[in-house]
Image 1 (cartoon, rainbow, N blue to C red):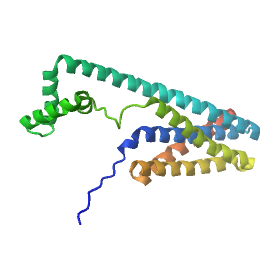
Image 2: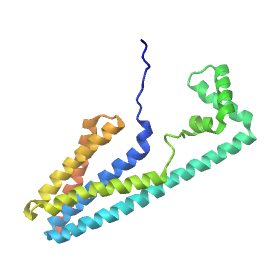
Image 3: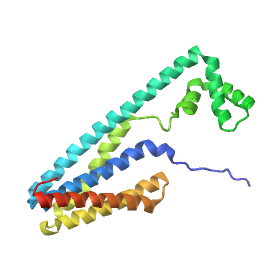
Image 4: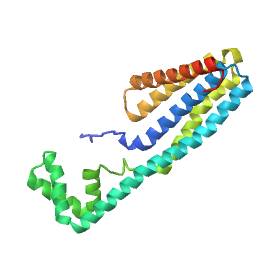
Length: 231
């Protein structure tokens, strides 16, 4: 019995996965760093919790706005390039055919076959063929501003809630150590989940995200201790 060869590629997840990992990571690191900084400045629990809640709300809104604006800029550029390409296909069809054939020839296809392939692809979807070959734009990689904004805001809030919850229930003398340790553990878990979802090496991602998270919290705690203010 013959078996179909199945391939499992994960590149289609890149749009939401990047925004999700960025949002959750930033939520944990920024909120935990602020909590540790405020705690190191010898503030009371109410000030610490208020600062954490403010960081969660402001950070989630900032992530949503920032992702939407930045990804919208990418989307605008993609649309502008596609519009120019569409006009060129209408006004210079022969040149565009030669250009597309050239891309395939450069990749090792025989020139005559490359032109035949290009002609067939352009007969079916000329703009799509040029978008993929010339501009690197496809349905998988195309910018999605709303998806990126929603994903970043949601995952930032989820990430920020973790150190905030630890700060709310931990005795004040142990708060700094508990929030730092828990946040590093959360970051490690997040790095592992993100790597697994993207099919990347897990331990490399875990080491990277925990190292930089620990550095951020250590610097913020140092600032809080030295100056007696939240960083």
